[in-house]
Length: 340
Image 1: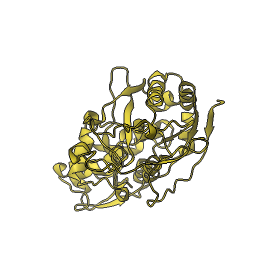
Image 2: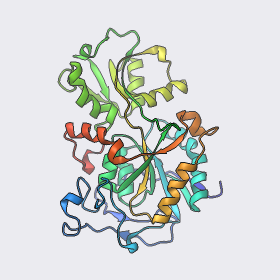
Image 3: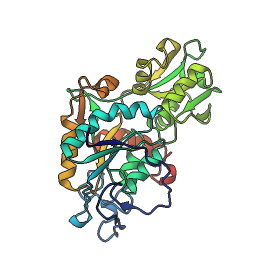
Image 4: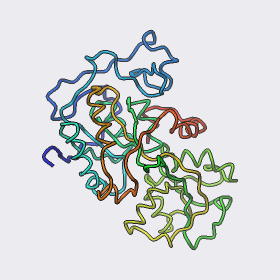
């Protein structure tokens, strides 16, 4: 892996940082500061929810590439990050083979950026220090609107199937058997921006007879893994979690499914999205797409971990509609302060 370097970058990127389309460390290119796009150049109906640094003239709900070639960036070192997870070193190792493939296809060096919080990941792309990323379901609209993130892929099957479900876990020995039994109990949610770990429960649970924050007190655990393990240890009485996360935990032997019981499950949601910064040079962006869609999962750490065929195309406008609907129900505002 001559072109692949793994580094740990500082996750604490302050909210007060100016927005740059800056090249990652190691690049010999100068930094270029993004400038707000005035309304006369991007009317409100072409901006939508996007921050004032971005415009959406083609109506696909993601930031357009800047029209001026001088504003494109073409870094010689690409920074990649995967959504915050418990045990980040384990996941960093899983990505080595793919990142080597990304380096080979793009002809660039690739560095891995470990993040502990959604805020750090989105701020890094907003600040121009992150070029390619896998961003969790709920935070994806934040990244799109605040950081000019362009999601284009998701892990899935050759038949185009993808997704995960929201499951409500209780301990196998619990006396909780229905959603209404959650009244007065200790229930762990993940973070305020987590789709299955908070926003979907807020929108969907009332129709099941229980209102989070009213019928039970919400306790934020910080991650799906912490929620699941907290149920098993008895710290929490129940927890809404993403099926794909806890399935992988069980596969790694972190807990036995005999220890838990599912009392509720939704139809599938989209999983982690994969995309790049909106202002990358178009030829580089196309090479990044090529790297994702030509990567063979069979026999690789990613294939073993995620049990899917590979990366498949997505449409943020169409495939994230249910997520945006849930967030609108929750009156979510796409601001930096509301990310985590």
